Image (cartoon, rainbow, N blue to C red; front, side, top):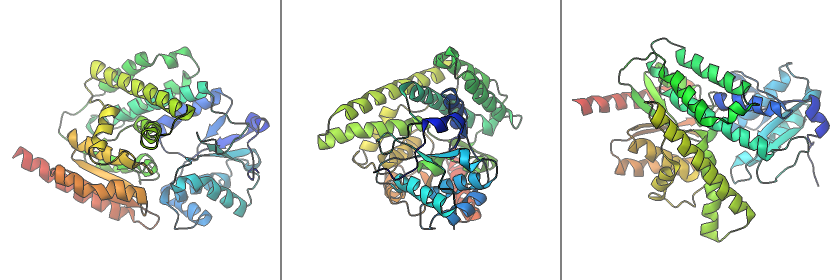
Length: 415
């Protein structure tokens, strides 16, 4: 028996849907894609401190850090006065896996009831059939456009990270990034949006045209739990901090995480003998995403001087040399693979971001560092815990120490 408030077809007409923020570039494009299909999606911006304060009022403080911030952000939006609670719905992903992320939705509904917002429906975005909402459907056409938006976002994020630390005029990279997010959002309802190669070439041309310093910068890779890895709210604006400290950020796109999720179904089939339409669908989805990634890599190499991402098949192979691919709770083998890929590609300085007490990440992140350092002695990896009680200054001091070690290694190498 269904025990949650459903988002109905009638609500779709005049309700605003609020979602948590995570990937500013990607979500800016996806927001307009959803608008084409009749959904009015919005985000509520604020500070980490504000979201933590509201989150700690709404959920117990022993819950994981991303749950506290995400629920705090949604509750803060309802209490801000910017949205009518009687015409507002909330949206959150639901994985269906063993991670507590599967329970965010139930914690959010409990917080809504406690605060007197029981009338607000919470839409579950999931691929497991956990909940159904007649007013929100991920149709093949909508999902396809969201995936294209994801690849555009990955490309912009990837090349902008190679421009920001070197720009002669501060802010040039952000202007180009903002222009492309706005342009892609505007054309998301036209055939131009589907002309991917053409748009890739134009994006690469504009970022290449940014005037830059030709100086050596220390490269720092970011890996970790998906929310604190990508979300500026979740990682205390880690990318901005690293750029201020004179570093170039290297971070794989969200496309890698999507391929990781899909390939796990195929791995399950091989390990446990599972089969069926779900496994076949995931195989086809994986091959589609991998083909799209290879197309992006080819465009970067052919039409620019930017370094291209690593083919995901190679990333997967790196993980299989260190652990069984059945290790897939949370970020699973992907987290270890990303650290290995960074070190192998010359990015020896790596920050592993993780919510304090996140068991999967402590095993495949912090737990694998010693092994990686044994094989790659030049690697310089630090794990940074994020928690409501963690002081930002302590996090930044640990990162500064890692950067100092990295700079020392560069001087010794060049000596």
